[in-house]
Image (cartoon, rainbow, N blue to C red; front, top):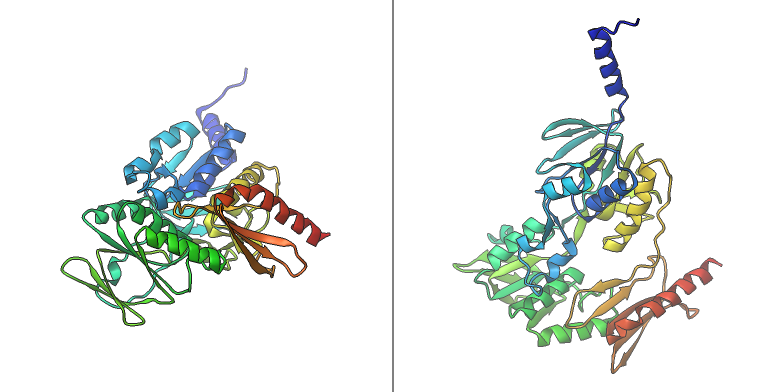
Length: 405
């Protein structure tokens, strides 16, 4: 008969615990973080998954922030799931309102507000932060950026009683917010450095049409201009522009762009450029650490949209479970939320050169970005011509295959 002592049982428990694999840890509760957690759980019912987030962890659609007014959505109305509901649905543990302060990659260890946490695989899904411009004046600190649910909550609170909103930035997000606000009857001013709306994405003719349509909806434009000073008034703000013009407004919103959150990665010695540099399998330069979403840089590009995250999630979930997979990114058109002029865009690759050829029809406008040898490298479709999205996507794909051959 074998005698099992208390010490032997204790030793066995300790050995089992030491052999237990550390959890997969995700930092970030945005679209990338939660969709990766869901993909992992679909593939493995047993794998332990922890998620850390600096905010309250509520699940919501970030792209929906820029047209929430049109849909009569409050901040609370945008929430699809609470932390508790997500934990129960996915059988994961979420540490909300908990900041990760440091990564010890050699020890596979995180330092957080709640203490230390071991990981087997670590995924950085921290997104991007609003770029803050250094304005002069005592009202500069009151400029709002709307990049998450808490930002939107603050924006809606301050919008109460306002009649006029000034948006700094004439890019995609600035135009979406201008459309949303003016569509709800607010007076809107848009200030931008360049000559027409969304100039990095649209040919001038289509950009001007968007400008005209939004003007008819109540948007004033101050282009090839910038804000030099923001002063508080008894009610509202006074903005002085570079050309000397003065705008009086109730609320100022900045939409000048986002910067990937790379600070935590950099302090851990992970290679970063504009974003956290990853390969096709979403691996960073440090073993067992990956990056996904707006904070990641893939083949020299930032891909700040939902579609690339969806394709990356599938590949990364397999990689994390020991099935090495490279993310495959098809051509991914972008649909802009500007009902004043519906737009669908497919930008050419950064290394491709060509010229815009724009045609106006009764149904809308068609802009094709064409190479010197006649290949269609990208497009911008406006109005009802957005229905042509698939046929022009196919032509761009055929041009890509021809260039490779």
